[in-house]
Length: 121
Image (tube, rainbow, N blue to C red; front, side, top):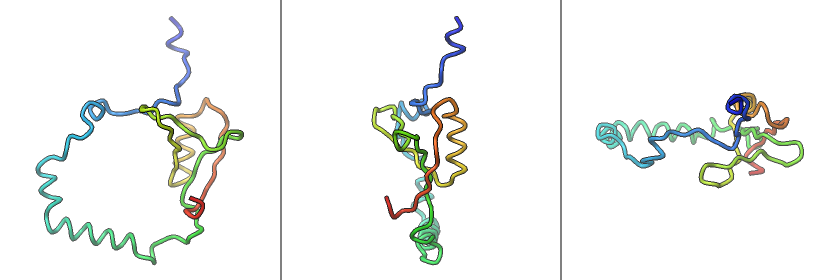
């Protein structure tokens, strides 16, 4: 009876939407498809893409862009996805990594943060 109340969290499980599992490629609604084919959408997309690729907006080559969680003895934290493949969660900020760790991995081993740039990847 008490087994249900005190069972440990399964950190290998990742939440998912059952509708997406049942029909993973439903396609887009017709009105959204029509909007994406319009000239104004293409112009806006191209403007956003060029703004993101502008060299003045890019961070330095050695700037820390990613945060990984590391176990003290085993290296990077690795999760197993529902299909059985391994996954290394990488976060865009240390705050997101901390939130993930305190929310989903609070009962697991003590983890450390590693902030890296794109160079070692």
